Length: 121
Image (cartoon, rainbow, N blue to C red; front, side, top):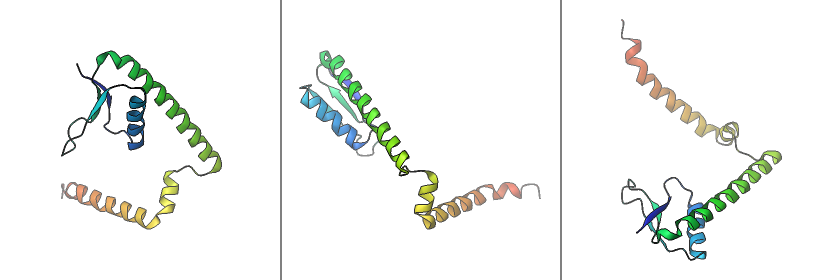
Protein backbone atom coordinates (compact mmCIF):
# COMPACT_ATOMS: atom_id res chain seq x y z
CA UNK A 1 0.00 0.00 0.00
CA UNK A 2 1.22 3.51 -0.77
CA UNK A 3 2.49 5.63 2.09
CA UNK A 4 3.24 9.36 2.20
CA UNK A 5 6.94 10.00 2.66
CA UNK A 6 7.65 13.69 2.17
CA UNK A 7 5.35 16.71 1.92
CA UNK A 8 6.45 19.18 -0.76
CA UNK A 9 4.40 22.20 0.34
CA UNK A 10 6.83 25.05 1.03
CA UNK A 11 9.88 23.00 0.02
CA UNK A 12 12.43 24.75 -2.23
CA UNK A 13 12.59 23.38 -5.77
CA UNK A 14 16.24 22.35 -5.45
CA UNK A 15 15.58 20.40 -2.26
CA UNK A 16 12.61 18.58 -3.80
CA UNK A 17 14.73 17.69 -6.83
CA UNK A 18 17.52 16.42 -4.57
CA UNK A 19 15.02 14.23 -2.68
CA UNK A 20 13.68 12.79 -5.94
CA UNK A 21 17.22 12.05 -7.15
CA UNK A 22 18.17 10.53 -3.79
CA UNK A 23 15.24 8.12 -3.91
CA UNK A 24 15.87 7.24 -7.56
CA UNK A 25 19.59 6.64 -6.99
CA UNK A 26 18.81 4.26 -4.10
CA UNK A 27 16.19 2.39 -6.19
CA UNK A 28 13.29 3.36 -3.95
CA UNK A 29 10.05 3.16 -5.91
CA UNK A 30 8.13 6.41 -5.48
CA UNK A 31 5.71 8.78 -7.16
CA UNK A 32 4.64 12.37 -6.67
CA UNK A 33 1.29 14.07 -6.30
CA UNK A 34 1.02 17.70 -7.46
CA UNK A 35 -0.62 20.63 -5.70
CA UNK A 36 -3.44 20.60 -8.25
CA UNK A 37 -4.74 23.31 -10.53
CA UNK A 38 -5.51 25.74 -7.72
CA UNK A 39 -2.61 24.79 -5.46
CA UNK A 40 -4.87 23.64 -2.62
CA UNK A 41 -4.03 19.93 -2.65
CA UNK A 42 -1.09 18.53 -0.72
CA UNK A 43 1.92 18.02 -2.98
CA UNK A 44 3.92 15.08 -1.70
CA UNK A 45 6.23 12.21 -2.52
CA UNK A 46 4.74 8.79 -1.89
CA UNK A 47 6.29 5.35 -1.66
CA UNK A 48 4.73 2.43 -3.52
CA UNK A 49 6.25 -0.08 -1.10
CA UNK A 50 5.73 0.57 2.60
CA UNK A 51 8.63 -1.77 3.41
CA UNK A 52 11.05 0.86 2.06
CA UNK A 53 9.73 3.57 4.40
CA UNK A 54 12.39 3.27 7.09
CA UNK A 55 15.23 3.29 4.57
CA UNK A 56 13.76 6.28 2.71
CA UNK A 57 13.20 8.28 5.91
CA UNK A 58 16.74 7.53 6.99
CA UNK A 59 18.15 8.73 3.65
CA UNK A 60 16.06 11.92 3.76
CA UNK A 61 17.05 12.62 7.36
CA UNK A 62 20.73 12.22 6.50
CA UNK A 63 20.32 14.45 3.44
CA UNK A 64 18.57 17.16 5.48
CA UNK A 65 21.28 17.07 8.15
CA UNK A 66 23.94 17.54 5.46
CA UNK A 67 21.91 20.33 3.82
CA UNK A 68 21.49 22.09 7.16
CA UNK A 69 25.22 21.92 7.90
CA UNK A 70 26.08 23.19 4.42
CA UNK A 71 23.58 26.04 4.68
CA UNK A 72 24.82 27.08 8.11
CA UNK A 73 28.41 27.02 6.90
CA UNK A 74 27.48 29.17 3.91
CA UNK A 75 25.60 31.61 6.18
CA UNK A 76 28.56 31.91 8.55
CA UNK A 77 30.93 32.40 5.61
CA UNK A 78 28.71 35.16 4.15
CA UNK A 79 28.39 36.75 7.58
CA UNK A 80 32.16 36.86 8.07
CA UNK A 81 32.64 38.32 4.60
CA UNK A 82 29.84 40.87 5.16
CA UNK A 83 27.69 39.48 2.35
CA UNK A 84 24.75 38.16 4.38
CA UNK A 85 21.39 39.78 3.72
CA UNK A 86 19.71 41.88 6.37
CA UNK A 87 16.62 44.06 6.36
CA UNK A 88 18.83 47.16 6.27
CA UNK A 89 20.78 45.87 3.28
CA UNK A 90 17.52 45.09 1.49
CA UNK A 91 16.23 48.62 2.19
CA UNK A 92 19.46 50.22 1.01
CA UNK A 93 19.59 48.06 -2.11
CA UNK A 94 16.15 49.22 -3.30
CA UNK A 95 15.41 52.52 -1.51
CA UNK A 96 12.68 53.74 -3.85
CA UNK A 97 10.83 50.45 -3.72
CA UNK A 98 11.17 50.37 0.07
CA UNK A 99 9.77 53.90 0.40
CA UNK A 100 6.84 53.01 -1.86
CA UNK A 101 6.05 49.90 0.19
CA UNK A 102 6.13 51.84 3.44
CA UNK A 103 3.98 54.62 1.95
CA UNK A 104 1.47 52.06 0.69
CA UNK A 105 1.32 50.43 4.13
CA UNK A 106 0.77 53.82 5.78
CA UNK A 107 -2.08 54.64 3.37
CA UNK A 108 -3.77 51.31 4.07
CA UNK A 109 -3.29 51.78 7.81
CA UNK A 110 -4.74 55.30 7.61
CA UNK A 111 -7.87 54.20 5.77
CA UNK A 112 -8.24 51.22 8.11
CA UNK A 113 -8.27 53.29 11.32
CA UNK A 114 -9.79 56.54 9.98
CA UNK A 115 -13.40 55.55 10.80
CA UNK A 116 -12.44 54.82 14.39
CA UNK A 117 -10.64 58.14 14.86
CA UNK A 118 -13.83 60.08 14.09
CA UNK A 119 -16.11 57.68 15.95
CA UNK A 120 -16.67 59.86 19.05
CA UNK A 121 -17.21 63.16 17.21
